[in-house]
Amino acid sequence: MFISVVIPAYNEAKYIGDCLEALQAQTYPSQQFEIIVADNGSSDDTARLARAYGARVVMELKKGVALARQRGFQEARGPIIASTDADTCVPPWWLERIAAHFSREPALGGVCGPVYFADGRLHERLIMRYPLTWAMSLANRLGHTWWVGNNFAVRAAAFWRVGGFSGFDNTGLVGEDIYLAQQLRRVTRLLFDPRLAVYTSARRTREGYVNFLRRTTANLVRVAFLHQHPLPWPDIR
Image 1 (cartoon, rainbow, N blue to C red):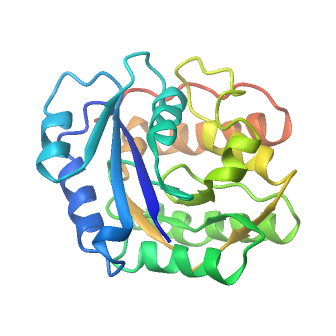
Image 2 (image 1 turned 45 degrees about the vertical axis):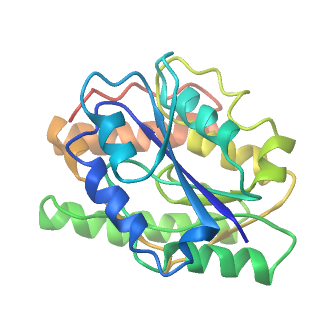
């Protein structure tokens, strides 16, 4: 089962090396997956580093993570497309476990897992590991699966059946990940795997812990329940 891994990136030279090293260390056969970095017009060494690590780089100059992710998905060759972010490291068995889910259940349209902080303060790491993971698990059991953009995989056929991210009125903001899950769960089965965890940077909390939690909660409510645009994130590197 060939898998395409899509990574949207904008000025991520500080982080993308670790991300790509983690993907190179997969237990899944290297000839059975490809890595696509969708460069969103970076002005640093993001594209050069990605190529140095063997990734295929595609350009999306119009700003917005939804547009960059969509561009990467358009270039994907695999029947399964996984996505993570440039500041995220996946475990060595990430692709192997994703492939196992889709192989075991032909009707499965998408799979996702928890996202933990690799750094940050202890209480921040605990919040990501427990309350947020519990919320994702409960939502899946209730049929309202949602996921975070740095840890999910979909069947390409299901992705294009709902139009991918193209229906998301992108204005350079976040929320395309929750939007996609909303569209997919109407037409296919989605699965939350609590063991399919990845580790990401806690840099977003640098805007202030209270602001980070308020923005995260507000965006979840706005996109998942009110069907409104999310609030913008500050550009933190």
